[in-house]
Image (cartoon, rainbow, N blue to C red):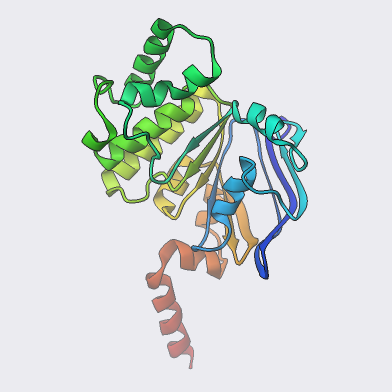
Length: 258
């Protein structure tokens, strides 16, 4: 197996007295997608913020593509971010720009490509995410699912080696959530990207990822392949996967044994 592209090594993070991450360790191999799941407030979004340099850990190390980024300055982070794409929970598109300009934003900022080259890249990307012909539409004219696809298109425009997804299926109906999950898989297969997917959506986590890590109260309480997580006997994992159904079954089981 190749060396991991992303490594968290005993990472601690706290905000005042509130401990958000406690000795969190995991790794993501090249071309692999890791889903990070868990209840709200357990540190999932903090993982993403640490990975893009918005936060610095209190202890431990974070290694990205062979670089220990723990002591990176802003210039070093800016250089590293050129190889990273981010799909935000609420798409975070520029409302005042049309779809072509949204996707082209990073290309114009960070490359010397001509406008013709940029236009061709945008057309290819829109085709890959199933949005041909929307170049001159504005975000307000698109559905939630279409905005998510534009956000993914913008994230892959610079052909990054690492993609980070923050709740990419939040607020979408099951059909569109499935489409987004398929796009995540398609993007991994086509580009060979290494990805971290933060999600509450277990269907998406199981469909789009290779491995799953569950955070609870700042600690990783379960980690494994999709098959291992589906067959896990860990009560926290089962409760998160099946919610009230599992909790009700637990209650009935206790009453039967009383």
